[in-house]
Image 1 (cartoon, rainbow over the protein chains, first blue to last red):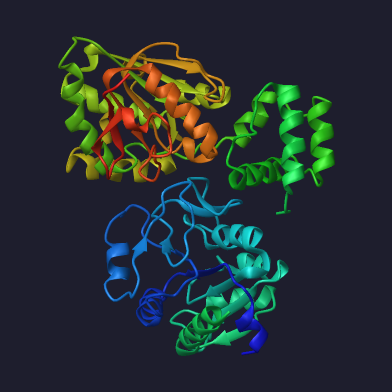
Image 2: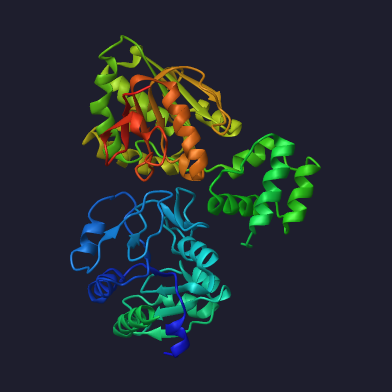
Length: 199
Length: 273
């Protein structure tokens, strides 16, 4: 990874994932430092009508507390947020979440595209977008938007994904800065942590 | 989908306010911009300037604009656990009086009001309740009044009802036609539907229970505060307020005048004037 991609003063990490991404997410949350300072905003496809259990399952091995934000809640440093079941999770100018029950996008609510696109608009080049394993193309447009706004784009290496449609769809429509297996994504987040703390 | 700048949203709000008399300034901009994009897609409009020109020249009817801008995604018994919690609360509404009034603020196509009718009917309380259901959108109110729900949406409604009730069949409250399931009109006639815009609404009556779920998420914090104050004023002492499971009243200046009845399901009780 280029040094300049590590030293930028990022404001947030946004992660999208669907089928096959749950264990990847738990891995990431298990191996990032407990004092990782950037907010981590996760949009992951999940059962629409099951509200409880998901956060708890993600949190079991996590070094950090995981929460579903309320509407208009402020995005705070060092927190991990997950899109609630059956709501789109967007980010609003002024660094707050804005939830929505609008129509499904790409057959999904929450839609990864909506989370990533609104993050891109608010955080511009100070955003890292990471797209993991998944069985549909949700998230591809969001990654494109992140790139357009100058953010850093990373996808899970399709050869390693349980289902590679999601990262491949993103790679097909936009430039992806790094195609990494999970262990390199985790290594990157740890290095990033060290750099962000140095400055 | 094109990016709409902050300046563009300001221009749109001004023209819309001027032409239609509706103020969207304090809506949540992330969703408002998507709704604008949606209108532009439906009407095949390519630029903001064209959109503004069309509004100014009466090429987009007010009712149509409102209908597309507002979000009308709803279900019968949405969040079944909420309805179970509410069912526990309802008897408390009769502690001090014989008859009660319920207001569904932002009722959309009516599913929440229909759910309430079913709950009250099954509790044997229907004769003791007056129900008001309001929305900003005239078109959706007409739909709500018709009782019609597209058949393809009934699957989730039936499942929600079973999750709420553990058994039973919601289909007994509907007449099935070709494309629609039509809600029991005998029950439906108990609801008084009204056109109300929460942005500039004033208290019009006193209620024992107000439901406003997943409506305020489309407003910014300032407007949410105003609307929560309106609800506080519109509630009798010890009346209840129910909001969406991911909504909050904590930043409202009247938050301290409510007790939390159920934190998970966001049910509150007014205990101070």
